[in-house]
Length: 105
Image 1 (cartoon, helix red, strand yellow):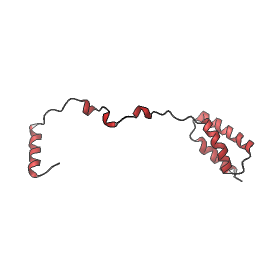
Image 2 (image 1 turned 120 degrees about the horizontal axis):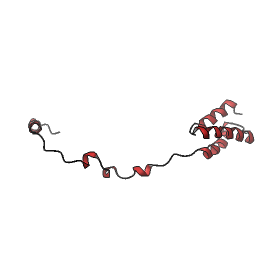
Image 3 (image 1 turned 90 degrees about the vertical axis):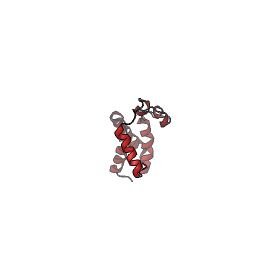
Image 4 (image 1 turned 135 degrees about the vertical axis):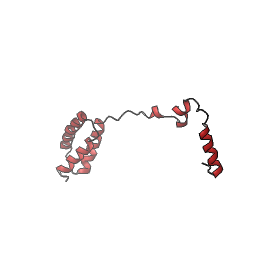
């Protein structure tokens, strides 16, 4: 036989994902359902309460469709911006110097 603490912990865990108004309603309904069912253990209580918890849980909105599509086709500030100006004289000299030293990065 499951102890009262085990069942209370189970109710607490199942109600953790619910918003506060639904949480209190679920807890009251859970106590009533367990009193009617006369569960013999924690597993039997879970089977009763899992179905009850689904009735009180509202899943979050699925906004994955807003983020769908290939990432390489999305716009970016760098790709949509104006082209970069030609490199400065100092930058060209630095590039030439690195090239001459054998740096190929």
